[in-house]
Amino acid sequence: MPSFRRIARAFLAAGLACLLTGQAGCSGPQPDREGRLLESARRALLDGRFLQAQTAYQSYLQTYPQGSARLEAWQRLVDISEDARSATGQAASLAEAALLEFGGDTQTAAALHVRAAQLRFERKEYAKAVNHCCVVLDNTGAPDNSLLECFLLAARSEIALGQGEKALARYAACGQSRLSASDKARCALAQAELLSRSQRDSEVEPLLQAVFQAAAIDPVLRAQAGFDLGLLYEARNDKAAAKAVYEAVRPLHPNPMVVDKRLDSLQN
Image 1 (cartoon, rainbow, N blue to C red):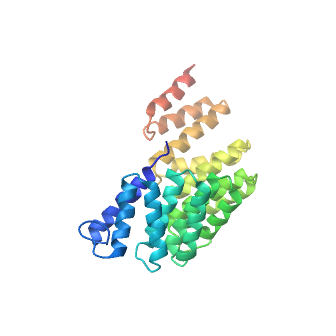
Image 2: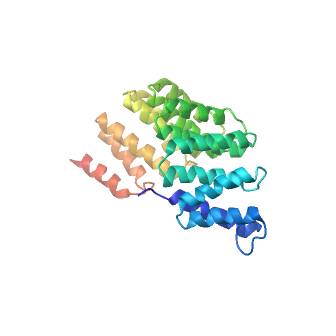
Image 3: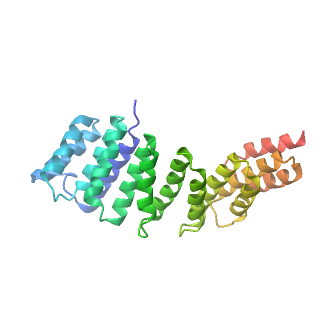
């Protein structure tokens, strides 16, 4: 059975917006045809009648070219195709169609490009995923969350394409971007993992050290960096260094028992 969490979250978000703004199609009487059609689409979606919801949202887009809820309609059609019908190709095409309408809105376009990139990646259409991400990365006005998603997703796509050096350069560019220290740390950890696969440990260590020692970074990310650093020292048979870093990691780690097991193993 497909997961409908995304649809449920989206519907609840739309409902909250209605309560705050009094938008048509929320609650109470709807005297206009546009509001009634939108209400029928939302109600069908909430009830799990996805074919009816899909038909209603499609009708909304066809009937109201200037409708205030057109973005919602596009987004819900993408959700239904992906989550309710497992039709990721159709979902990607819908996200790309929405871009034709909302491409001039920086933040909306960035979110749609990210969504399309995720869908293309899921379909193993990695070059298309990279293309969508590059549009976001080249847009200085794109939101930080979209930038981070595209740095990581573009690199994963390039790895899948056998372009490891491009992926490493992508992670490095993330580290030089305007993103927060914690966001950059996510890129650094992914970069370290890729370097580790290539047994380039001399390049891995400084990346992990930088994340682990940065007090401003999310403690969970610092814990991950420190734990990986401990494993690196263990692989070098440097038990003293591994023990020291594990002991420093333990207060940060969300599951200290995992660290305790590594410390116990060093006693043997």
